[in-house]
Length: 478
Image (cartoon, rainbow, N blue to C red):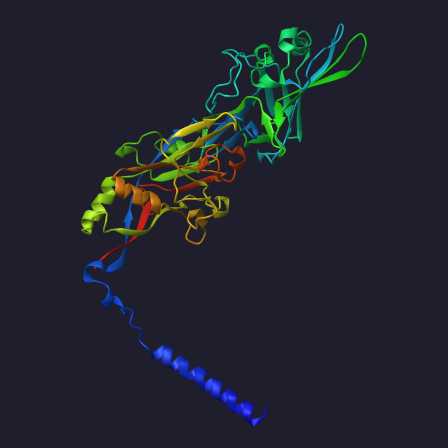
């Protein structure tokens, strides 16, 4: 190194050292500029914790029409008990006309469903799956829910049953009796008009099917997730031809993007919480009691909706806070309102890896509902605007180190203060939170694939150490 370079290096080091000493020894005046703000407009920040009322309620009226997955199975959870599900659907001949020729003779009639997702539960267990014929037809432009009973009469007799071991394809032979009903169908029933497929006369002749698993006992069981594209293969012979196969299915059209549209179909879900065996199970808490005596110490969040936390932030609690700090609504500038739910880890088998990384979202209680027959979906026009999945950092994500979920509901609290009303909502495990551009609303639908992921226990209102909290950060006058 030459002398000039050496001198420059020493000068640079000296400047750095001087700067470090200057800045580390300088006491920054944090009140700089305060004198320019009028006394009546100066603010300071503070926080307050409010404890919302939380209850557990059943929420069976979940829209399952135009199901995108057929749930067929029975699964047992020690906390939530037994859940058994089946699917109701229609099929129609896949041809403009259907003729079976002279003296058609039945060879086989197979109903086929194909798995489209990994099952939940014991993949190797044998399950009894049964198929029933509907006694009443269903309609594409009607709404059906998880609690809607299948239309199979009071004393139903299965068309057929089979033992299903979890294979990729479920095939059920429906037998000669039902096949002959198809082979001998009157011409009026077989009429096919592509412009009126929603209301085909065939649906009055063969109203549809209900496929369901036998309720599980003594084991974990399994919930199977099938593609909603059911197919019915009728193979027969006549005097002219042998082994002719005709296909019936529940797909009525494809759009330009390749999306399938179906005839009327929906899933049914039957829950038996009373069969739960864990000390922390649903039967051990108060259900459907939204009085002061019904406040829950724990909140249970699960897939399939079912039992759901119902949370109420009372206007009187917020007004009490404003009065205690001598503020009115116009003076309280809320920076953030965060709903915090801490995991209950008091039971012995607590494992944070079994909790979902994020709770999907929340929906306002009793939102306005519109139904679009064209899209075949139910839309709710009420939702928590502060929460928006994948856009908000407080989207119900799990903080694993602090063992808590957080939701940013600032907008709702501000609106509540302005309107002086209670803020009420369900906490529901949304799985698809995309905002529909045509309706500017949040899609509210059951996605059965998320049963495994969406299961959590958090502290409720009366939890001894981890109560549900609304933490408000706000600015107030000096």
